[in-house]
Amino acid sequence: MLGTQKEQELYRRMVQRHAPRPKYLRNAVLAFLGGGAVSLVGQAVMTGIVSLGMTPKDAAIPTAAVMVFIGALLTGWGIYDEFGRYAGMGAALPITGFANSIVSPSLEFKREGYVLGMSAKMFSVAGPVIVYGLVTAFFASLVRVLLVGP
Amino acid sequence: MRGKRKGRQTWTFSCVEVLAGAAIAGPKEGRGPLGDRFDIVKDDELMGMRSWEQAEMCLMEEAVRLAVLKAGLRPEQVDFMLAGDLLNQIICCNFTARNLSLPFLGLFAACATFAEALALGSLIIEGGFGGAVLTASCSHNKTAERQYRYPVEQNVQRAPTAHWTVTASGAVLLGLTGGRVRVTHATIGEVVDLGVKNPNDMGSAMAPAAAKTISAHFADTGRSPRDYDLVVTGDLGEFGTALVRELLFEEGIDIMDRLADCGLMIFDEKQDAHAGGSGAGCSASVFAGHLLRELEAGRLNRILLVGTGALFSPTSYQQGESIPCVAHACAVERLEGGKS
Amino acid sequence: MDFLLAFIIGGLICVAAQITLDATPLTPAHVMVLFVSLGAIASALGLYQPLVELAGAGATIPLPSFGHALVQGMLEEFKLSGWLGLISGGLKATSLALTVAIIMGFLTALVFNPRD
Image (cartoon, rainbow over all chains, first blue to last red; front, side):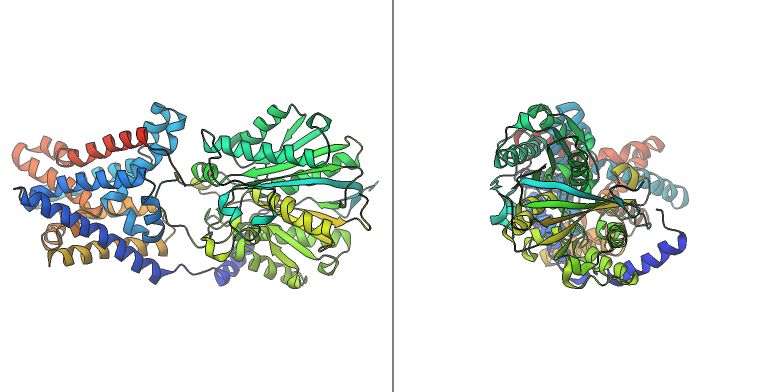
């Protein structure tokens, strides 16, 4: 039985009446603490790299690379997903979460082979991030160059 | 001729007995409230295997072999095996049936698979087409996660309405004589879809199917909730259970305190399973491990097991389809006096 | 002070993402994609660089900075080598982090197995 429009609407209202509310406040606080903590570590890494004689601007990308390294390692050790269960987007949004999104499927699908499993699945989340990042960045830059110059 | 059918969609059985049941569970389930009811609790989700899929096959095969052993039979004395799981092409059951060399029918009805197997197995016994029929289903949290959701190590926060697929299997051997519990009715459910699309909220997708099958069962048999000690759904979770209660109430059925849910029985609140357990192995292991024992011990006299399944795939929900659901109900009761 | 600002701004960006996740039917992957795109747009509007100067790693560690790095790479390369630079500059600027991510993904998968 496929419910009619009216039945579906009535049921949707009943579901809404019973639906458990997401814990907005708890999740937001945990995301704040998690994301803040990762940024703090990032700041420490950046300070370290700057003390080696780089400008803060040039240090941003090497810092990101170090954080990717840390995120990958924590994923391999099975720690990052536990962190993410609590911190939510506080774990997913930092660049360590980007590393996690690359490492976790490649770990998971290794058993389906190194080419079609591990490597092919590596970009299941990171792929879209790179695609939309590049496409948006290209058009945003293009519009800026055309309208106001670089 | 109506014969053994009652009403529109209910079969009645007069000679189907449950000879034995076996349930095997993973570590998280073993730590839950029913931990001591399972025959074997694994302390490692990989179970010494090379992949999660192999671990799930291991769960299935051990439960099936144990159920046969408990009934005092050898695998070759089993006439048919009816089983299903959640994986693509139900590989766990296919491989188990291969290893046991049994005539095999593979079933899929998501979390309702066990109830479907029980109903069809009873049909074979009642029809005289077999004297010993194995019915089983299993699920594994990690295989379900990687097929339906995310890689194990990916950091994701689960929605409060999301279910936790249990790592467990349950097998029941049906036969003609020698049991202490019998299957008396099976109500085959209609596929119901009220437009719920969220794969993280299967409780609300499945509730209408469950309510429809339960009320059909009562209408077909002339029974009411009073006739059962327990109406056990598997698996709606907390949210879905509340919806079923209200849907039944709208149909004029007061289910009272008789409604329980396998997914809520297998985990407690501290276990971070959110809406509760789910998966083809959930109702199978709760029935074979817990409910069957309660019936055999006389602590329950008659129950209605209502398996509820969300019949969707990652492809269908990614293409924006809603989630069709089905529920099958089996009435199981204690044999007075117990024969064995 | 740098550290406090990094913590607060980094945390707040993640809170914005968390609220987006909880209040909409989007999946975490959708939110990540959305925030990278928002970062790119903010960068082209000249809004993200001041945030980076204020918060340091608090702005460069969350993913919107990937969009920012892409846009800044494109714009700078455009200044040096014109229209072709606009195309090549994005990946050029981010190649270090991307290559590390891919190599680490490969190596970690070789060494580790998923566990509970």
